[in-house]
Image 1 (cartoon, rainbow, N blue to C red):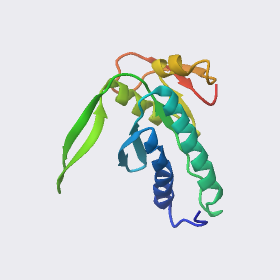
Image 2 (cartoon, rainbow, N blue to C red):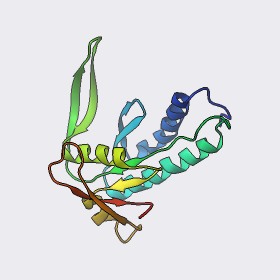
Image 3 (cartoon, one colour):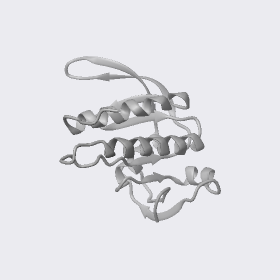
Image 4 (tube, rainbow, N blue to C red):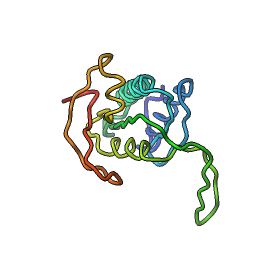
Length: 160
């Protein structure tokens, strides 16, 4: 593994490359700035993938130069039905097509990721119901998330 990185973007790209082997259980649909968006067919594999990403992040952080702050990875996992297919994005310079997922379930997953802090893995109620009993799940608070009408109970996979 590389011992030195020129900047944080280079570190984030390396972490994304390390997450690529998750493609055996997922479809990596987008890498936007420092976000990796995936479709994983079931909640158990989603949590396993989150653990793999966190482990790769720890390995990369140990190799960073002393003057570089560690990279903090926060993950949001939500389960349910989403619309999937090709989507056209028109920009000022060009138009591109991408395979993506859309809907409330994906919006909540993105908002959970944005709400997580300190390297946490947050899940919604449906994911909690599926993984409960296999892994510990800690109740957090009811939270209002952008684009969601009612406050949602959220759960942490790592801390109470």
